[in-house]
Length: 188
Image (cartoon, rainbow, N blue to C red):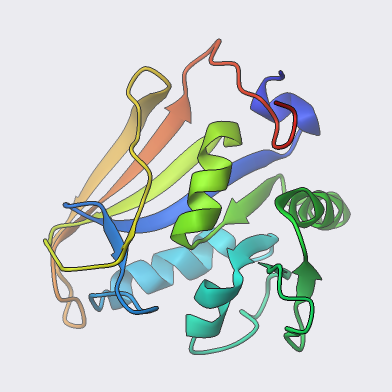
């Protein structure tokens, strides 16, 4: 068991757009259009390693995401993604991301989806950056529950929809409460 940040001095940050009903995806796509949040996503992840599941990576319009080391988590050994680092396990993905973050002096590893990757990493994350999308879409992928005993909301900013946004949204930052100890993946 270890404090998350103690692993290497590099933060593990989950970044997600989550509807009011917890939905993050439908059929491998986002069930909304928020260009304002896409700009926010780019600014926050630029210059940092991003860890992403294969299905989410395939949903990106531009692959790999430019200006970031894309580390794709996939158990499918025949899957390859030009310009991305492939990782067969979460441990391998985080090891590659830590090395990249240290080389770049990035300070953070960004986990950007999908649902399975979020479920595997929320217990070891240092911070959550959530865009709460004020919609109730149907979907087949959900973000894990944010436990208030573990996570403390530290920032909140309300946003009205811009000209290319389908909904209003709120950006939220959650910090891990001091003393919440977690197990590293595979250490059970």
